[in-house]
Length: 450
Picture 1: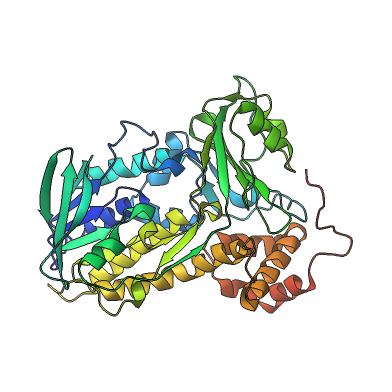
Picture 2: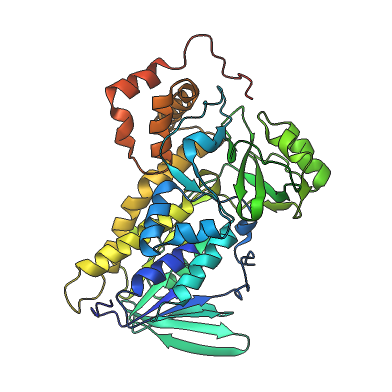
């Protein structure tokens, strides 16, 4: 049911996860929602040219899955029926950590794994079916329509040789890492927002495999071997996905050379601890090796601007983009859409959305995820590290070194990782003391893992 509270037509720039989630929320409030996408939509669940990270392993955290299920009821069942497996994080994950591998630990934390194009296709189909929503692809937004520096009233777009203007009461920038919003704001005479970047120089190489007919898949549903400065500069994340396929992403930090071809991919996997090399060696690749290196953490401080134009908000990677290795992007996008819903519902009748307040509240939503990603990534930087970052890294390393030997702590850490629990979970004296005491005597930081 549309609420009709002042935002009659909204334009969303970008049809990625953040844009689709925002369009779903706006469909409940607006008479019309137009989603503008630069790419041409693929017919099925194929990667888009503008989302090259779609070739690599993606994770939807437990909290993000809950939020998406609320906006798209039956989504999990639909994806499962189409082949995306559902499994318990504690039982199905083989976590190859520096100090060991936790044993299977039932957590009651259901996880569903799929390729990003598979999920995006399902969401795009759901959003397209919403009565107020129109998806337009093959269009590039070239600028904002304004009535002066204080109010945005639409966008200018170009498709081929044709240019047009689209009027809107609200413009949502969800165009991702390639956002031109800082330049557009400067053209309005507004100050440039400060951008903070943290770059661990992480790169990926990925491919998918199929299991031979009659061959049982491995007992685990996913393998996670994280990177950690300064010693563990190679890692991987592999998951079983739709179509009974195995999706494998190899990581390398600090400029580590990544594989280019079949032989290099297996050779790189053999340098890792854990089971991944033995599993993929007999399998048939179903894709080429794809590489990706645009993994810098970047946060634009729109929330600190003293002036912000009416009729405009920004969310998703256009505001705060994370190193994808931590799997937070899609979940944070879902939480930002939920914030948009709350603020739309909280307005007085016919009152415009307060864009500046939205950016300020959005900054609070991204703050903890930003720290989770950038504290370990700053450890790779060659510049002198501030003591709070050193302290944070020490604590996180101590925690991760302890969880292989403490199921309760492993469960608590998993809740923190999946954002179903907040950082205060670890303030419980019983858990905090275990972290401070550290791993049991006799364990080795470089213990071999099965």
